[in-house]
Image 1: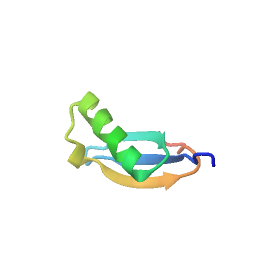
Image 2 (image 1 turned 45 degrees about the vertical axis):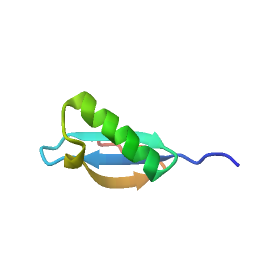
Image 3 (image 1 turned 180 degrees about the horizontal axis):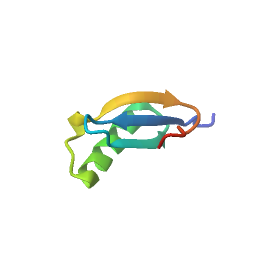
Image 4 (image 1 turned 30 degrees about the horizontal axis):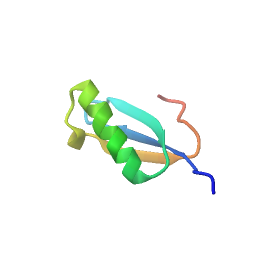
Amino acid sequence: MANKKSYYTFEEPSGTTIEFQATSLQQAMTIKKKRAQELGIEKEAFELKTISKKPSQSV
């Protein structure tokens, strides 16, 4: 069975948005943590905004 990936978009209050593909919400949360650390922002600041099959056009 093929892994179906979805695009996960997270945003934090100041407007920083991160979007990426992941196969599950659990994987998305792990990636979000790594991306937040790279940006120097607390992972708790990011909230899940959308889950979709296609990338968003605004990012």
